[in-house]
Image (cartoon, rainbow over all chains, first blue to last red; front, side, top):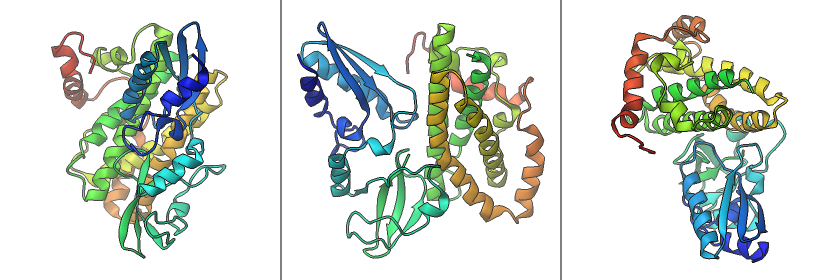
Amino acid sequence: MSEAQVWDALAEIPDPEIPPISIVDLGVVRSVSVENGTVHVEFTPTFLGCPALEVMRDQMAERIRGLGAEPVVEVVLDDSWSTDRITPEGREKLRASGFAPPAPREAGGPRLVQLQTGAFRCPYCNSTNTRLDNIFGPTPCRSVRYCESCRQPFEQFKTI
Amino acid sequence: MNAQALLEIADDELILGWRNSEWTGIAPFLEEDVAFSSIAQNEVGHARALYQLVAEELGTTADELAFDRKPEDYRCSQFVELRLVPDWAKTIARHCLYEDADERRIKELIESDEPEVAGLAAKIDREEAYHRMHAQMWFERLENEPQFQEALEELRPLVDQRGEHLPEFEQLWEEMTEVRRSVAGATW
């Protein structure tokens, strides 16, 4: 079995909370290595309080067993995941599903005045005439914004 | 690794997360209900990650550290133990004071020589940035309100008050550990 086969199999696992994008699109798989029938995966969580983490880990293990290998999924609790790891394909899929993709990460981190600007684009009508409605949304990774142009609330992936 | 110092932070985050979650369903308005519940969820997530790190060092598990210790073994501050529902001004005063104090100790941990401590602290810090923005927004909204100013003055001296637990901590512990205590070997 090759590493590429494992990557392909993992790329079929949907994100449990945003199913249009896969966990590989999301950037949570940091590395894959294959050795003597054992597949070692380094998994870097998104938000530490995200309840989808266990689901992702179990689905990866199940998928690897389906390939006939023994999975070792190591959860890496460090600073290696950021929204910059979401692939260009993943960002496009987010937008197509009505989630505004995260802005690029900047040095110094996000600030309230930035969130309160209209620099974020509505995923429905493309207008930047949007305002912050709530820093927090239905899951830890999202904020809620409102588009003044098409009068539609939308979810903005937080930059982290 | 200074396991006891990390446990102090983990216990603060778990207990504050628990207290914040008491607003779920009854916060002053819907957006705030979502926000405060989300913040509570993040704090419990930070506690879990810190417990995992300490558990590896001590040869135990995160769940055992979170739920199987005796109340007197928790190292959280009295500040996070306070049950503040239904006083929103005090709740926001605690939120502002806590985020400020928490930022300082997390920034210190980021400088740790131990990569796993520094790495986890850096990740926590990036999530906390959103809690700080939320606290800042509320501070700006309430800073001229006498009720809020009084709450800040009353709570400020308690921020790092450790040692004895408050009487209300016992009840929180009872609620928090009830499932673990009643179902042997429960993993949920």
